Length: 403
Figure 1: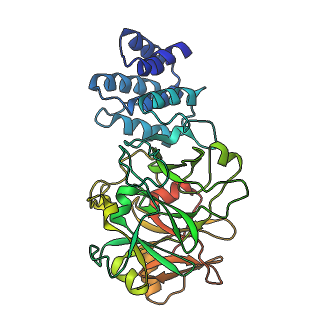
Figure 2: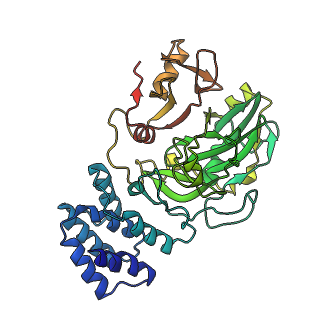
Figure 3: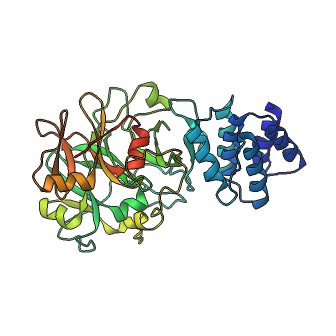
């Protein structure tokens, strides 16, 4: 079986071929009755351009799972089932997966390593890794290009923004900055300094989540992480990594899961991100700065109402049925470590009526038209907005606040 797996899933990629040897190997795999092997089929299927080969892989996966996989969305259908059914990974799974991914997309050799990450859940997001050097924002790449140390303007000079444009607002030590969604949807990552603090700011368009992590004040011997987009997804959430060490981070939770930074147990602290509109943000903070229009690269996408309008476009397995998948929530961790999600629309109406929303040490308040979570002393607790499906899958034991 190991020989068959190597012929079908390694040799085929290394040699860029699919001939009788691969077909015989796949037939042997399909007849094994081992559903775990469907994970490797899913990994190869993600990159297959041939309709005929896709049909052969789909037929083999259907045989292994005892369920007919639809041809019109074979990779997504198969992967959703594997995740939802929690099919275990086969022996030496990472080795096979690494061979497939790194031979098709160079640059991932240092990404696919052992660590505190479930590699079953990771797949290709359709773009290449951003491995440009730090502070080379304007260098072109066939990737989602992060912005390092972006230039800013005053609110008065930002005439290109409309008042109803969505921005992600961050306030650190009395300094305020707006990161327009229009820019973040083409950059997806910013390494910046605000209020004397270094920040890494990932935005996952698929999760509707802009987050901000402090990348300074770290334990001795740890250099500031420079966060980049890997081109990979973990259950429809972007996978970010540190350019210096190639340590992979759990983007949603902020801790290193592979590499030297995982070995040191690095957990990044989170700053609060306010999702609001530009008109309200600049009225609340007239001294705010805002990123320059040129960082949008001439694009103005609206993925929420376009590409993602009908639900997640990548496999995520089962979803928590308590809210619609794309419902906006405000997520935060309490002092006891319990994750709590607040349905944004419901919470906003309650706060506007003057209701108090408190869970343990967490209290919600309206800031610049958005919602943030603060402690009993009014301190920020590092809350942010996200789609329900994303928050609930990375915090499966989350409490959902009810009015």
